[in-house]
Image 1 (cartoon, each protein chain N blue to C red):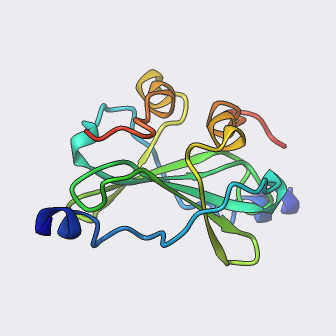
Image 2: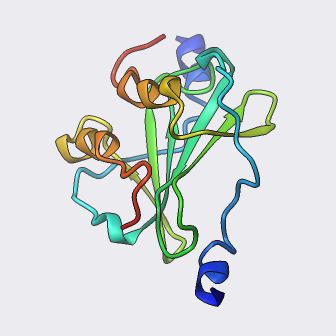
Length: 75
Length: 75
């Protein structure tokens, strides 16, 4: 139990949203894979307004988002 | 030409690497899609040592990486 608590001490997100956010509002997307610091994947979207939003990695629009990143293209 | 220069003023990466980095070494992955601040997609991997590495978004291992993020699973 203690290990479990410690394992999640470095999570960044207290709660996440599944609400859709338009890509036009993003400045960047930070992905923190499961690891020693936090035992869940965390996805943090930084908005152009500089606020940060934790989004639910299981939300369908979030899963699609990473597949659709316009790698070489300009928006 | 001036617009082009301005458009890239906020890029974070001066150069990128295509060299493979093991996921065990990541702390987080930051994706900065093409946007008003930088006219190319930038992917910045933060290592557990806290140093940051800009990786080439066109490198095959980088493209695969985002498809393989272990969403709900523990490593």
